[in-house]
Length: 207
Image (cartoon, rainbow, N blue to C red):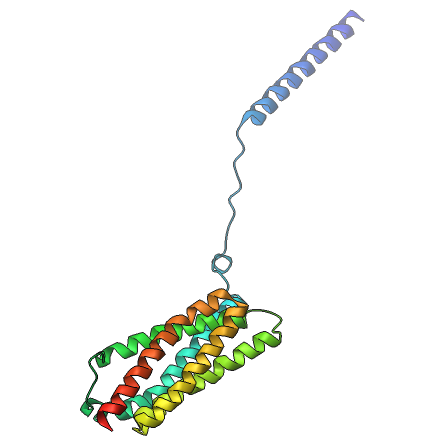
C-alpha cells in the first residue's frame, strides 16, 4: 500500500511539473508583442475613381473650349491676309496674344458652367441661367463669323453689343445662384468690352 501511495505522489508531482511548464510557456507567448497585420491594397482600389462631379466639370470645360475651336476656321479665314492689312488702333495687342487669352477665358467659362450645372435638382432659375449661357456662347461664335469670315466689322460691332448684353445677363443669373460662378465670368466680359472697343476702332479706321 505504501508503494502505491509513493507511485501516486510521484505521478502528482510529475503532473504538477508539466502544468507549471505549460503555464511558463504560455506566459512567454503572451508577453511577445503582437505583429500587426499587413493590409494589401490592390492597384485598382488605390486609383481614385472619376466621380460624376468630375465628369461634369470635364464636360463643361470641353463644351466651352469646343465653342472656341468652332470659331477658329472663321478667324483663320480673315487672319491670313485681310486682318493683317487693316490699320490698327494704338491699343491693339499683338495677334499671338488672342489664342492664349481665349483659351483661359473658355476654361473659366467651363468652370462657371459647372458651378450651375452641378446643382441638383435643376430648378427654374438654374435652367434660365444655363439658357442665357448657351445663348451668349452661340453669339460668341457668330462674332468670329461676322468679323473675320464675312469681313464685316460694322455688322460684327452690332453683334458684339448683343453678345455683351447676353454675357451681362448670364453673369447676373449666375451670380444670383453662385457667387463663384458670377466672379469667374468677370474676366470674360472685361475682355469682350475691350474687344468691342477694338472692333469699333477697326471699323472706324478702315471703313
